[in-house]
Amino acid sequence: MTYTPSYNVAIDKRDVVIRFKRDLVDQTALNKFLDSVELESIRRRSELTEEQAAELAREIDRAVWESVKQAYAEA
Image 1 (spheres, rainbow, N blue to C red):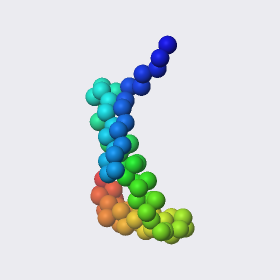
Image 2: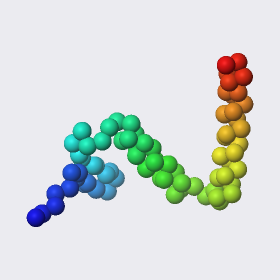
Image 3: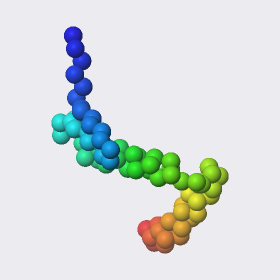
């Protein structure tokens, strides 16, 4: 019995084209997958150390909390 994958991948010099039937995955899962591909690309190009990245994440968390905590305090 021959296995036939439910997807096709084509790679050229600049692009990767992945084809699969629309009902194979929902839009939310596809968006999450593409976000993770993009984040991995950014991570590979980054020169941050793990500690610098962790500190940046903490700073972002603090900044986000500062911008939304008033809404939670009023709720």
